[in-house]
Image (tube, rainbow, N blue to C red; front, side, top):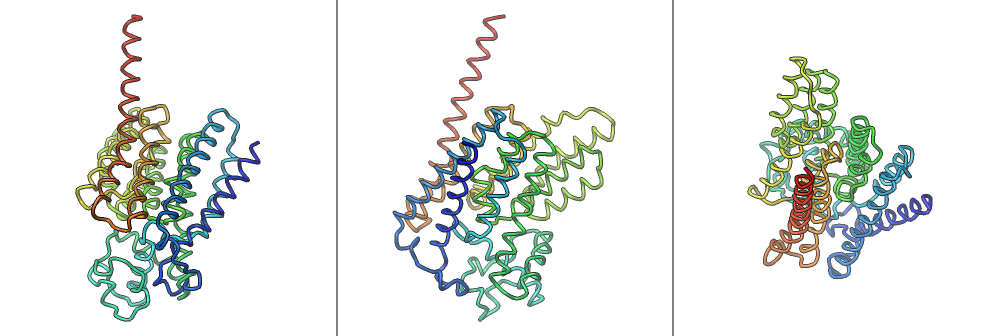
Length: 380
């Protein structure tokens, strides 16, 4: 039964990879032979396939979590599942739900090919560069921290001037940080359930292994920092948290939690690591929600708080709300995919599918907890 589930999951991932190429940009000259325009001319069918794919993904996710809970899956099975997922989706087309990866490649080219500062020179200034055909937001300066800009040099240099090789080098780089984060979840928890909870979360997989967002890099450095703090290697922990902040700045909200934990370690006091991770989760969900006031909430921002959820699996209300948000945020892509516009009714539908399921789950679990408290009081 387990082998059959793994096989079906592998076939599903392969189908998802094939489906991703329906979204090839018409201006991406390097993949013009694969351009069909299907996703843009058959929006109803495309949206239906995407919606069904998300649901199937969560069905597999639920099966794997159940099997992990029942001790049917061990750490070797987990490694196989993670390796299978990475190995198949590494070859998926990355610009299905976002074009951020093109901004990464273009920013790297500005710095390492043109030797210009991406914080003061915009991509649009390089008239005639073929990357401008498919890169979005070319009239903006670099949006990310300097450490990410430096890391961009790795896939850029090993691309040897070949765009497709560079593009998939970026995917490979992101994938390595996904693996690294999964390893640290395992190292911290020693739990197969917790590792699967993070590594096979459909949102984590879709926005990291397909979309190749750099948020996983930021959270890998954060988790590494907390791991080193647990080992009382405070200086290295500070360095890696600083590196995390210099990726995308969001983890600056973790400084108070980090400082309190570090202070206790210095004073040789006991650190309640569950509380550290709970407050880290709350800090990251606050900055996640605050992003709504800056521009809008993007689904891949959920990686910020989802990284901490496996470290506190006993808090059921956090677990269930996070899972419902994972589903809702993936469905957030549907209105634009169907309607082809970010305006009109699209923002309303996005907000509804994102927050209503999570709110209902939160209220249900809260009511359940209050009922349990009343029963305990009655017994006393």
